[in-house]
View: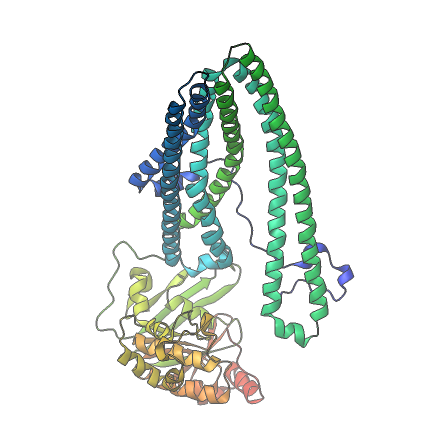
Length: 616
């Protein structure tokens, strides 16, 4: 459940309509020009053969569509003519059937290739955007919501697919038919075509005006439906809370208001569409009736044939429909340009953490030393508050250093800098004597294994989650790591062993099991430097014991930095570093620091009294 005050008001009578549903994803804005679509064209231009086939099929089908009224003219004027040969009628109908066959085959070819292009372009854009996102530093995702980025990767690319796979094809087809059709009409009956020039705007303008209103109300209707869906997902996802606080009746009323709002919007949409239908049908058929009336007069006078009138009426419908479709297509192209612009922003983003032009190689074999010298760092989103201030620390190979301190002391920031997720504003950090900014970040991270506070798992099977530490590990190595992490027992009890799907974020496992999998993953990494971030936090006593035993095995022979609040881990450390306000305020062993009576002693006393060291 969210924390919006309006949504949680106990008095339903005081709740505004807009509070009836959770917030929805922002719809991609329209661009002011079609310029951003150049990015889409560059992607599509990689497939010239498919474009050529699709365009050829489009020209053929557009021409065949206009050839159909010409064929009907021949059927009427020659097949039904007085004194005509009855056996000759079939020739003109066979001509029509050829046109129909060409139209059907060309439409199928056009549909396949433009749809293929749409899906291919979307797939390429998604891959390129995702590849670029993987290169960006964590600072980018602090300033840009991952949910909003996900929306761009799904809804915006869906709009691009529609533009490439449908809208552009429709625009080109209707442009061809509108231009060629208009020329054909003036060739067929110049006098009636002059009247048509007057009639088309009379029909199209109301369609355009009603269409804009209908499109706006349709978008609102879709938003209301999305509100209902989002509300259902929210309430069902928090059903235990709803029932625990006896809020079923309130949620029923809230849902009913959302459903009624959806119905009211749909009713307005239906009413507008009904009025538009009446106006459009009246104008279209009224105009056609007037044109046919004038045509009938011309036929009686001998100025036109009956086939000409039939061909003119059908061609008029095609041309009018083409112009009408073009007015709608432009709006879709603008939406596509807006979506392309948002995606291009992600493609154009450059990583702030990148390897230098000539990265310095880390020494072999790795030693595992860490050095911080006069490091000052501020997070990009919080530049006014330094996380580390003139921080210096030397960690020898194989040494275990525990880092403790109150919340906000800067403990987790040390890990962020060691992994080179960020660069400090001043000072240097070295691994095995090499400054991090001089080395390739990928080489740095190969020498580090991380066990996070929450055992972060992926929506995959157990094998793939474990192999994340070393993707080429075989099953024997995986089971060895699982055994060392006290994870073998529950893994073998899973329905399909290592092939068991663990659910989204590993939700099918308990917290302790997730943490042991994270430790096994770090064991498979087999890196000389180990970072443990509150690895035993929020675990029950039994799980903590199993996890701590696994951590003891993992730490053997490795340089280890431990963010910890449990005294069992702190006491085992070779050295304890106490931080406050981004600075080191004390260093020493557990006994030395306890005897000193400083900040560490106060934190330890709080834990003995039932408290804990706060997590950073």
